[in-house]
Image 1: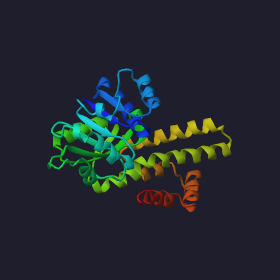
Image 2: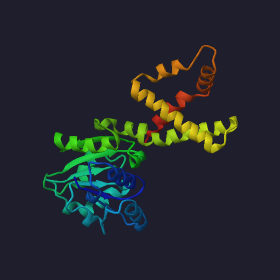
Image 3: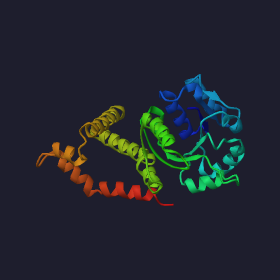
Length: 265
């Protein structure tokens, strides 16, 4: 499957890197277009076989999937530039522009003949660059076979879910915004580790491995997080004292409020 990625910014670049590291899309089948020569040169240096298009119109020709990785306020303009060249019968169109759903995408893609390509609205996160992303996918005008192919590609780059469109914004809060929330927790715990006597680099190393271990325990055992918490909270012990202090400071409610705030327009 041949991909054209329009935009090589933080998310577009992450997607290009993830796809290039996977096994389901050949590096030579990835074409990237971006006005920033610096960004495309960086990708080409990492993946010499990747194709760099001279412009968006060149990029979208002869590929199976056209992926728009541009800012929401630029999306309509970029689609207008290339939609006359798109093959609606044989190409799928993907957008990762947050807040622009499939109905609006179809409006942008409307050529007045009632025909539309398979249209996908994806919300990935930046960890897709290292094949540990979480991607939410919804589609219209597609087929089960195409859905399965797109899902398989993005599952290889971490994990992916086909969801009802009503859940896309929630997925964005949990995972796309969630990357920043997890980073903020690591930063806070690192600062706490410094206060406890560790050098900052060592404290960060400890927290990264602790998070990795916690995720592995849940992934392998399938337990509810509270079951793993119970294993390390002895009566009158240090862990329960720490947990209670965090809750007193509003830990759980702060997380939930942050997620809710991410949904506000």
